[in-house]
Picture 1 (tube, one colour):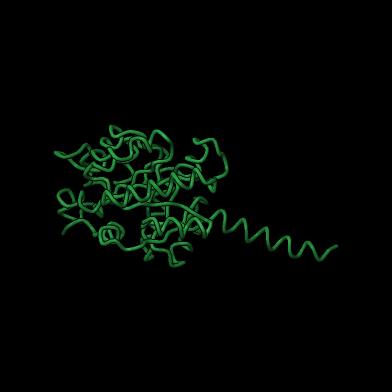
Picture 2 (cartoon, one colour):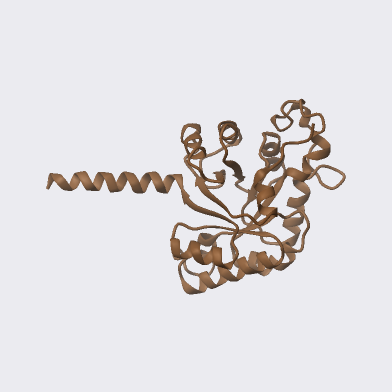
Length: 258
């Protein structure tokens, strides 16, 4: 039996649009609910959400019962973190702050087994192989791993074309918030210069045959990104959705006391 097919990677290869949502609450209850909401994919955020390996594992387990694909964003592209997260069953990883082709090349090696990579061969003990019940996991897993690299500063944009030339990179995600800050526009990803850089990057990613990705909670930016070629687009975040709805409801009823 081969490794399970990665539906998200297949969709990207076929050029299909994939809409997603960010998960920062780091809780299985809310993650399961979001997995049933109808998104194609969700990001279990280990960079800015209070997640660790065990909470990521738990969220992978509840998402497995839904039709929504789990993308795990690690806090940093460390080899040991990648190894553990893949063994826990993640098939798609988003690695933040990629700034050079050398870094990207090592990340490609980190998600592949020898002789083509450096991933540790311990799948006999892992959830990824369904605890040794997938007999051909070791020879088929590489083809189902989806590697997404996050380019989110000027150094990364300068290296983008070299990164895009690498085999084994499935998609590149442009991080608007960090890019805006690096360009001197903290908190203002809507600045015309930032928007121009984002759309240019998306066009370059698409032209190179990779899948471009973005997070946008503004419809105007979302539509512009899609027009530029973005293919996996996160359109919200659980923290923002809950916070905004709660504040609106509280404000509505607090106003009646006046």
